Image (cartoon, rainbow, N blue to C red; front, top):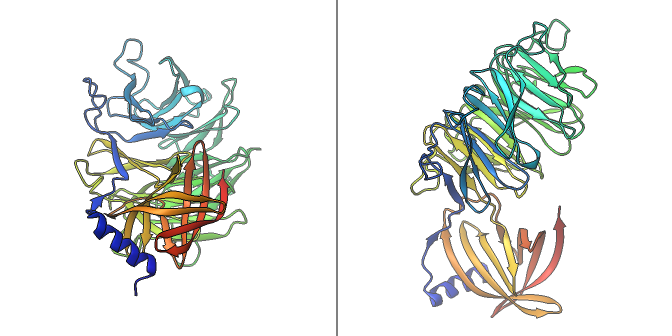
Length: 453
C-alpha cells in the first residue's frame, strides 16, 4: 500500500513530467590517461587519501598522481625524473603523511621512502633492515603514529620494523610471532596503527594477526580458527582499526572479515555470500573503516566493494560495472575512505580509481537538496524550499525519480519521518529528521537536528 507522500510524489512527478535519470554517485576520478598531459597511469595498485581529501595513486612504473577534491589531476612524483631513478622499484603501498607528504613502501627494492610536497624524498629504511642482520624483504605496508614513529612490514622477511623519529631502526616482530613457540608470523601483509600507539599486523602465511602494544608487547589477536565457531581465517590480508579500538581482519582465501572487539570477542561480520542478495565476496585484498565504524571490504575476485554498518547491514557499493558508463572496475586492489566518508577504490587492470560519493543533503539559501531519498524500493531526488522559520518547515518543490543510486548513505522516508543522515550546511554537518505535517502541499517540519563531528 502506498503512503500519502508516495502518492503525492508520484503525482508531482507526473505534473512536472520528470524523467528517470541515473544518479552518478560513483565517479571515475582518474584513468589510464593519467594527467592527460602525456603522463599515463598504468596498472596501479597503491592508493592513499590525506586529511584534506587529496587522493594519491601509484602506477606500475613508480609515478604517482595527486587528485584534488575538485578533480584536478597532476603528476606528484615520477621515478624517471632526474635524481629519482634509484629511489624505489615496485610501489605497493601508499600512506598520506602530514603537510602534503607521501610514504611509499616498495616491494622490488625492499625499502620505504617519504616524499615531501616539493618532490624531495628521504629513504627511511632499505633492504638491510636494522643493519644488524635483520633484513627487510618485500616491504608490504607502513603505518605512522602521530609523533612520526613509523612501522614497516616485510612480506618475505616475515617481520616488522619500528623507525623512530630520530631514524633509529629496531625489529619489533619476526617469524617467532609472540615468542611462545606456538603462534608464528609469516608473510606480513598489512599493518595499521590506532590512536594510542598500538600497531596491528596481518600475516598471510600463518593465517593470523598480531598486536604490537606501545610498550612493545606482542600478542596474537586472532588465528586460523577465526571466531572459534567454525568460521575460519585463511590467508589474513586486510586489517583495519576503528576509533573505539575494534580491529578488523580479512581472510583472503576464507572470503570473510572478523571484528575483534576491545574485550577480545571475535565476530564474523561478512562471508562469501556478500550481501546475501546474490552479490558474492571472493578473494578479499583490502579493508578500510571510517570514523563511524562502517567497514569497507574489497573483493578482488568478485570485483566489488561492500559496506558493513556497525549494526551489520551489508550493501554492495560498487561492482565490476564501475561507474556504469565508460569506466569498469577490473581487479580492484585497495580501498580507502576520507574524513567525509567518501570511498575510493583503485583497480589494476582497468587502470583507474573510483570515488563513491556520499549522498549528503545540502542546505543553502533557503533550499534543502536531498540527492537520494529511499522510499521502499524507489529512489528520488528532492528539493524543498523553506516555508516557515518558526517552527522550521519545508515545502516540497520538486521530486525526480532516479535509478541505481549506488550511494554510500542515503536519506529515507518511513512512516511520517524523513531521516537525513548527513546534511551539509557550510562547513558543518548534521543528522536531521523532518516530520510530515501536511500532505497538500507536502510540508515537513524540523523535528530533530544533531551536529556530526
